[in-house]
Image 1 (cartoon, each protein chain N blue to C red):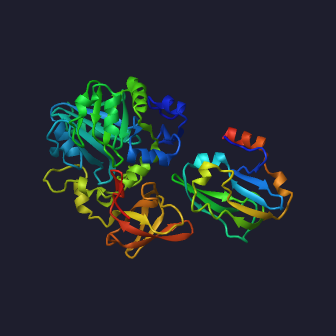
Image 2 (image 1 turned 30 degrees about the vertical axis):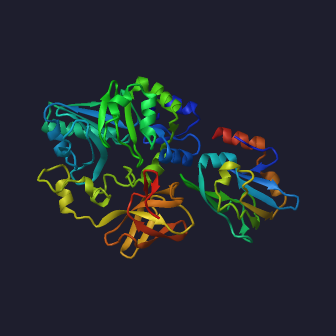
Image 3 (image 1 turned 90 degrees about the vertical axis):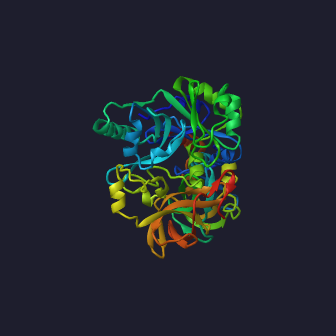
Length: 361
Length: 127
């Protein structure tokens, strides 16, 4: 039995094509996925991301626990509302999940984790809490729905649709969130566009979605979400990284704090295993197909593999993230095995597109 | 879902149309294009290629996934829709005018063994 978000009936009534995504019954597209993609790059679109799980960590010393649990350094979070992207690592350095943590008060942090990994993450946090700070309280917020509203006009349309939201969120800088009555509004997202992620009580989810649609925000499915995040050069957990790989071969070294003396779960393993691979972008040069996950990549330094690939609606070309041997450099030409052919691709630095504009050609 | 009554269908979601010159035009159904989503790549068989019934002979690829297209009946490819690889989105706009390829059937009676519209509608209703 697939799990359903509070917006399930709304998606079905809108004629969405539904798929099993990590055990959740989710909309992949409502009409044309490419139209949904362009709506986000050029105007405003919204995604039901209620399958992702908010988890509240409360109590004195919450920051200390996160210093130990997370590969990024929560000491960067100095002002209430500020968010940080981080990997949650296993002791062997593998990536258990990637997440966003919001600093709300010194004794209150909110963590947002992926859908398919939520139960595993919660169990892991509970174990760390039991070992290091048993007085801390961890509360999965199953009572909250989440709607990501993204695009150059997203913020203005949220303010138009949700009374009182403008006063609370007009001053938010990127990667900062705030409570707004019963809402939590954060200037974050997964598309490479400006916008908000709005947490709302599950009972208010449908009314909120409807108000946003009436303000001209286009409902978008997971299909467009995937092409947008890939153009923006953002990893997808379970595809571009997982428990079997280190963040250092996943394009995530910038999120791993190896500089400070702080110890964290997985640090020793990362230091002991210098990366032999790298995650890069690929831009397909030949016609002949679309880059897809698991295709083999032939380079002058050995073989690699596509981790995520798609057709980029913004570029009109196929793009990918690929794990390639160290030594392959930006601008190199490689060959990708697509069915029975080898197609030429160029190694490029993601992102491919953000803020409505192509960044590679 | 649009299932024209004057066409025949394969359970692998191709449509067939018997032409007056004895050739058979083949495409993918409206149901197939809707399931695939926005199409972005099409590869067609070479003209002159001999196809066996059930042989994979073309590829249609959407933003989401690639899919083989099968020859519903045996025959030789006599023409392909050369405009289609440059405009795969024509399949989403109208799957029945955006044909893929035309064959000279090995057995002219073979098309009569394909599903009629009512049988195909029943098939996709059960999907």
